[in-house]
Amino acid sequence: MSDERDARTAGTSEGAFEVAGSVVAGTSGGSGSGRAGEPGGNPGREPGRGSLPGRVLVLNSGSSSLKYRLLSGAERLASGTVERIGEPGSPVPDQRAALEAVAARLAADGLGLDSPELTAIGHRVVHGGTAFTRPTLITDEVVRGIEELVPLAPLHNPANLAGIEVARRLRPDLPQVAVFDTAFHATIPPAASTYAIDREVAARLGVRRYGFHGTSHAYVSREAALLAGGPEANVIVLHLGNGASASAVSAGRCVDTSMGMTPLEGLVMGTRSGDLDPAVVLHLARAGGMSLDEVDTLLNRRSGMLGLSGDNDMRTVTERLAEGDPEAELAVSVYCHRLRKYVGAYYAVLGTVDVIAFTGGVGENSALIRERALAGLGALGVTVDPARNARGDTLVSADGGAVKVAVIPTDEEFEIARQTLSVVSRTNRG
Ligand code: ADP
Image (cartoon, rainbow, N blue to C red; front, side, top):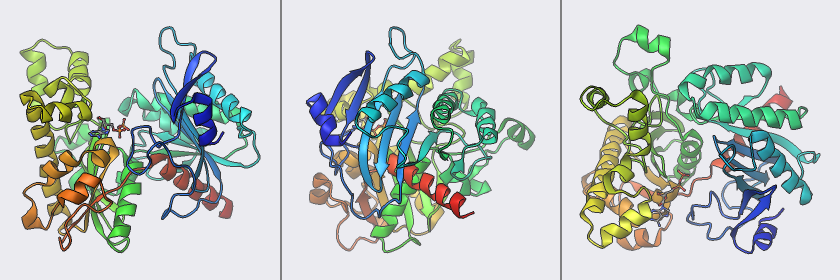
């Protein structure tokens, strides 16, 4: 299934077609978020990323969705999403049915899972804890290790495991690799990863900062370093999607990141609060009579831009802002103030900064957020050129600024495929 064929089948560049009554959306452009540089999809080799020696199926199994992408070298052969898995009334009861639907779809286009050309399957796994700090060849023991981490990621790891289990049953002979969202942040030093609470309690319950969005931070920081002349560069990555996180990366090693034990900490997000005084939780329970589940829902699903403005979609919020809506103005102010604080903090952590890279749906597409987040940082050598920023050029900083400001579309699936193949070639050599 080529992207063009996808488009023909569906009649649109992001069409939907039925698989056993379920929706498989064949996308022809990245995550479907309208990434800069991928207008309507542009399959084929993408410059500057080298080639991958092999064909990899990347699977991202969520609690109610299965996203897939088939890559050959740097070329995207197929991609799409099965949605509403296991939801009431959905004809797709579980991950097994979803992956079988994907396999049938790929087979119809001569790209089936049984193809001898398929080199490996790469699985996104959200939480690797302290046990998995690198992409890892999946064995029964690794599956047990991922299971042991379920208490740290009760929604995500079980869904990831379901995808792994089904894929291993379908192709037991094929190398399958787990690529962890937390792994890139494993290099964060104890000073940044340790919460200042009782050490025995923290150790017993795994309470420490892990960080997330690791494949995106790895990919974007590497691309950003190339803009600064090489891998030794110091980079701040601002991944701004529905979830959002910042990272400080020095010579390819992550030294700090804004998400913590869970993805709730740090920046203001679509529906998550990001940083707040932990005593707010106690107050909500004691004075507000809220249960733990209610507080969980409030902070993870009803806060952030949604809580502040009533809309979690940054496009809508910035449109309302342009019309003078005061709630949207406050929400954007809070969002950008938090971003600026993290940029300043990571400047201090790194000492010097070569590149600040914006990525994710908001970071790649919103000139307004980029401009407001970095406003007033001229004394640090951080500038934003209005015309370049409005166009969304790769470099949006003014000439001569000490710090390059870049817009770099993320590509987590490519990074998962890259890491998967690095494990396979290491295993073959070893
Ligand atoms: P996810 O984290 O789910 O992968 P994305 O990285 O696709 O999400 O980012 C989604 C966010 O990007 C949404 O809030 C969306 O409104 C925002 N976005 C996309 N395009 C624009 C734009 N032109 N201006 C502002 N925000 C945008």
